Image: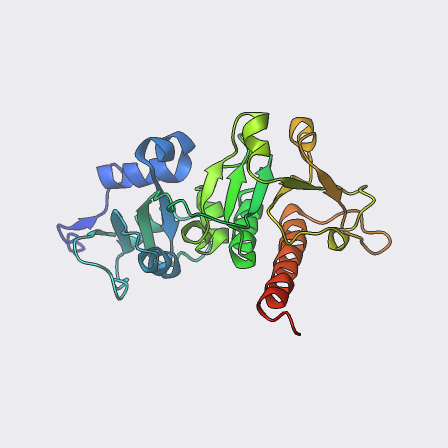
Length: 270
């Protein structure tokens, strides 16, 4: 007895142009850059994008997966066989939803007191995604990435970012030293051997915080532009923190100092 033929709108061939497009966006940075689009996985990623006003260009659903609620009209949806869909995902237990999303630039905002994160030479996509999520949570006004940093639209970075791509502008680091200096009057670099602890420096004003990779640190050219270097005191025997954790410590200290300064300004008698 032959098994029934798949429904005509069910994608079952890996040679299908839709599948080829998604594979290219998942695997290649140059394809993402050329299309100004990337792939995110899961209902949460889709809902985060929609809440931010970003409309998916394409939605792939594994057969048997329901369409996410609240989806705006007019979005192209295709259903894919289980085997083919699971081959697109790098998760052990795929969630059944893949979305092609546009790289929508967040609008420039006039910021009186910028808190900028500069990620330099970070190569691990999960680490960068966690750092982006941290920056969004700490209220960073933008994130700048050096040319040697992993693509922020890498699927693993997008997954670890948990919606940060819709909450904080992510842009390339300027190419010239003067343009980098113009980002903020105070540029702070995290350094293991710095004599000043991160919580001893005034971080409440306009600043940029540079976080380098664990393996390579901050590039000499970028470190030379820093106005201040800070360390994070650690217990005996612990050499360093990973980049995402170090970034979290400093960015949330800056957020704490800013809340205190805002409270004093708004309630000077307290």
